[in-house]
Image (cartoon, rainbow, N blue to C red; front, side, top):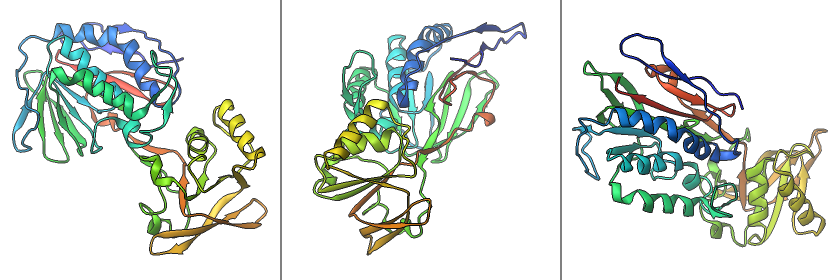
Length: 343
């Protein structure tokens, strides 16, 4: 898998050393985990060189008006960011985590906390939230500080070589190392182009499944042809009163095993499949009653539904272009892990 070069800046202007790193191509969010585990041997060695003169602040909360001094600031509190706290703790380095979400865990906690994950080394199967919970227990002895509902806006190098970071909440950090564990950056689900869908969001239309029980005995309409759409079709079918899957074509991008299981449910009459796209919604006061599905020939089908789950992917935002020269590894999938250090 092709990767960008990873360079260590030198203060004296001499030629930079260059390291090539390969990592396993895990699909989905676990690109980040695989990347960190293979990246660990490099960036931990770098941190060892710059651990002297560390501060000793272990506050669990911080006043936004104060400057927060840490050895390391980690941008992103997903599985990679949480595991980075553990590795830093072994080196006696203090860490602060900054994340745009309202809780640690990244996509695992926000989008699929109850979804089974099968490609984590050492775990035959683990849910997203269970993985996050175990990581939180693992790093608890190192007392990281959490700064949630915040987005890092600026990163600047100070005259003494350290870094200054500010967030949109008004926090100000000073540190010697900046680690980006932000995946593809801050993300939000892509909204399907259906008129009036905003009126149903949060009551009948959802872009993620946080609690499966909330969909029990509901007439579900799932839209999409990727892994998320197929995985939730398989996991929610036993709970739903009825389930209809809608996709614009007969081919699916999801894992072949998931596609085969979905087709088996379809053959057994346990789910319905409609070829086309949702073009209109029907309901009142945020409560969905039905949807119109239009195929490529313009034919329309009415589908009764009380809940709509559209899985059209995520929009990612990571403004690395505004940051200083960094040591960055980026995969073809767009996931990145960076470490900026005091020269």
